[in-house]
Length: 564
Image (cartoon, rainbow, N blue to C red; front, side, top):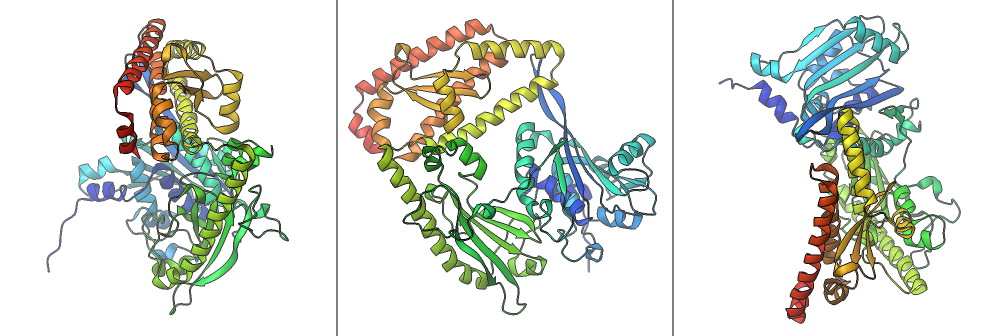
């Protein structure tokens, strides 16, 4: 029998590419803190600046730190934690761990250097360093365990409450900046997901002490994606044919399904219907935007939330049963399983995807099909009642919701980039940003539409000189795009295609991107902003007029037939 060789540096790098995004990687590391009984778990994303040329700076992640006041580790446990495929004998019943790879693979997906400072009751404080560059140099899987410095111990003791207390600090540096999204996107993702992922732990429903999570010092609130606490106990079942769309309802109250005939494993299933934002806004309970934000109603958030040992492992999973459809935006299901179900459901290494057993699928399919039909009909009922009442429907609302999210994130990224810039560059960027905003300020009505209904792209009756689009700004909420409803493109083509939702979405994304590109050019370039604004205005006029003339000469009937 031959013994094969291996390259430890490449193996470790490969483990970091098994399917993590930055948020899921950080949460996989935080699982160790939860399993260690920590009551306080603090996540910090530290930034630095990177030159983008021409004196411009961009904020990038420098270090990621996860601190906890859990049980900590002695040298034996620390050795095991750093081993590839940690021994399961160290994991307690109901742990969030599974394969013994999470810490190493998650850290590797974020950066090349992992540092751990930890202290267990009655044991000395320890510091471990796992550095991929050193592993590559040595061509061996090596790490160092030593004693923390006085400064590190002082910071550690300050967090855990004194030298007699226990805990663990995880620090990841030499960050893989090129493969990470923006700083604002990571922070938003963490704040959004931690409250859902650890909902049962933060609320104390996991059977253990309540856990407190903070992200860059901000406490994360628990978030139930099904909003079961808002459902009336007596009148809580959904009547899909008479639903007013105003409050959450039960579609399927919690029930058990069997996962396996041999082991007797079961899962708990429950499904709810969340409100219909336009109906809520029509009754002036809250704005459409506020309703969508509160209940996370939209693409990417409907489906099943699957919890393993009270920890979310799969977000809005379709389970190949819930198709893509705007009428299902308010559909929310939850499946609760424990670690006894791991092998039955074939949970992957990242603990983020599952494969249902045939028995589970056969039991779940009729439940989901009935619930999906009810949800679809309920949404359609609320939409139809509102359309009759108002006499109109808005085909652009779905994409505007997504553009509003993107617009908010890029605005935050701009501000973070400013914060890391030098004092002179900050002053310059701030002045150019103010000029870009002042050149075309949004009206109070436009601001109201953005705040109340997430309308980043707003169709207006006309724009000067036959321009097709024009950007506007609200100092607090950011970029708005005006689109000329009187232009030939809109009047003769788009308005005849209102049922073609994909075309509407594509054009709205295009208009938003054009306006965003203009703003970035004025705000971030070194060109004279006044000259840039004049050139942009002339360009919009030329595009508007030329496009109008081209459409006039086209055979519109054949063009419309092609895009149907």
